[in-house]
Image (tube, rainbow, N blue to C red; front, side):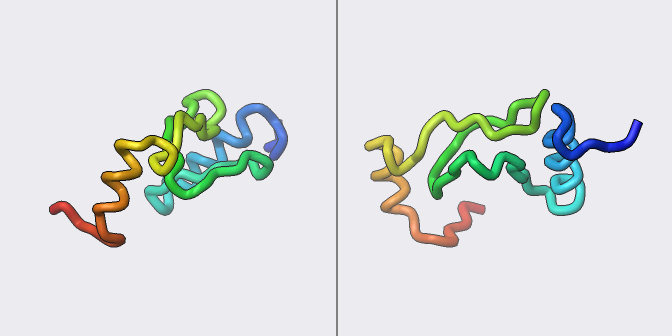
Length: 75
């Protein structure tokens, strides 16, 4: 069966291919807005990012993020 970009598993395949070469996760849902600070999980079936919140909209996390300089390496 030929690969169909718009099939249910196509987005998962895209995420897996990007992760294999970059060790980063991609998002194949262009209409889904992802903002800096968003956090959540990757849906294992679809490969979609499921947003759980944003560190800048959570008071305690926003305060922590504001105190941490950009490029901070804790190691």
